[in-house]
Amino acid sequence: MQGLRKNHIKKPGELTFKITAVLLVLSGIFEMMSLTTRVPLFGHIVTMPAILWYHYFYIILFVAVGVGTWLARTWSYYLLQFTCVVYTLDRLQASMYSQAIREYLMAELASVKIRLAGLPVDVSILDQPDFIKQIIWLLQLASFLIAACWAGFAVWTYWRRAYFGIEVRDSK
Image 1: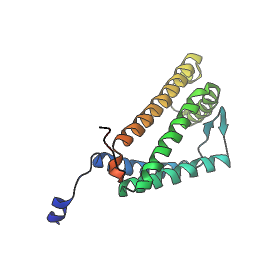
Image 2: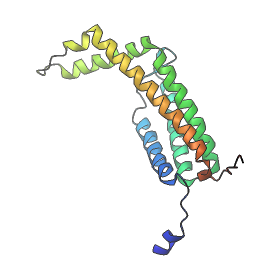
Image 3: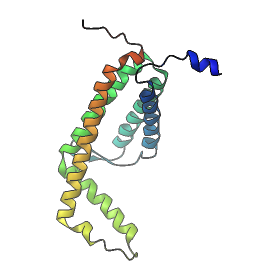
Image 4: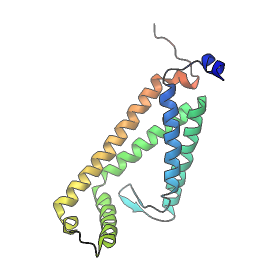
């Protein structure tokens, strides 16, 4: 067993891609646990049955790219780039529609108020317009930052495409 590790040639970025693969599969699993969670899509809160298609799409995408990335398959490089583009655009579109975010947030806050009813907790802050605006702004900022991270990862993956067996030519 020790001899096998000595012969193993590490590719640049291998550890990062292995960790990414695990996190992508976990993302697919978490997506399975949120099949009925409503999502903001193009300014509207999407409900059944469209949310099932949305979540199934991401489940299949995350698990497939996770497995392919773990195995360092060439096709998974292209699928990973596709995933980065799709998820970046999805996060950007989600951050653009503040009214949809408000609608989604208000529904979630109503649920929180119901769960906190009867407990010695002051929930009046949840109804204050300034608080709501701040939360919406933070959600938009988070979506934008997530999109930026995915875009940056796509660029980094391009630089490390040799991991997937894609030939990298010198420009010299």
